[in-house]
Image (cartoon, rainbow, N blue to C red; front, side, top):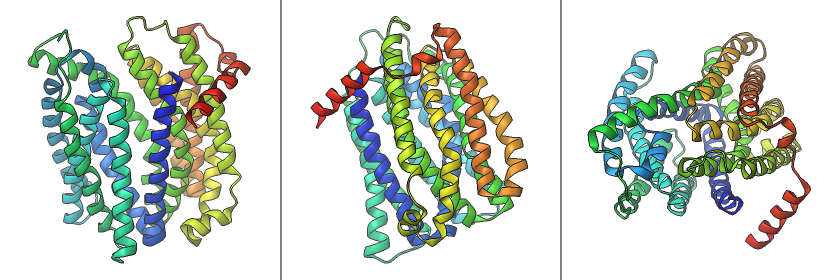
Length: 420
């Protein structure tokens, strides 16, 4: 498991570095206001993608081992078209945005959703190498096209991001069909097309509700800042959040492999010992990465992103405790998702929203983006406190089980040495 996690971590590290390049390029060449516009567009797309998961999402991974992938693909694609169309119309009705913005929102959310659906099916069949390759390729194309446009063509406007995204998702999407065509049908297909659709819908509603609520919890502050301040403030906040959350490649790498293994396991509790061992190292790695990020002086941010972004450092410092505690949250969340107890994750995210909404309302008008960071960290602590309590009760473990053991550190050093 650790070796597979390291491979997944390497992929996510490469993705994070390339994503950092995207953040830097948009911040450096579009400024804080341009970066804010890009962040709001990305957030709008992400909202649509969340509702697409009500007939897909992680349920595709859950059902792919025992179902025909094409039976899963058809309803997921149909639902995607409905959601992207209805969502784009809703955004146009609620916000004063240009018509061209809405067309890009509709088309790009469709392409991103199709790509996510296809790669989820590959991951559900344990085609992790293909999944990792496509994930890195997508971000590499986005960074590469932006670099050519900003530097080579001197085209430095927000629409550049839209056209770069078409390339970045369109080409890998075509590749996913090649990989899907190579997948054999599972030996024991449980049901036909009609029953598969009903099972996908039932499973998705339960599993994906927590993802929707979690996204609201993570990004609601952007809209509060846009309302009480401006796009420039959103741009500065987004840079601080992007740098802090980049550290989550560590717990997300662990959680993803753990979820896939639990889905395929016949005994859901047999691997609890190894899960806790990896969780301990995950918390330690997250803590180390956060300390390094917090040690960066403000001059680094102003030199890399521009003078407007020095204000992102206080955001990072306030977010840091919440980023660390969320590493535990992600491990526990993937455990409950893997054993099918989705209601625990749903309640967890509701707890977070109950903290986020009043905290944003009270803190952002007074402290701006620092208030947004405070609200986010408070929410992270509330969510994790509830989820950890449920995990300890369900597994019979204690908080001390998350403290790394000396032999595990030695084993990790050996694996890293072999990888090098």
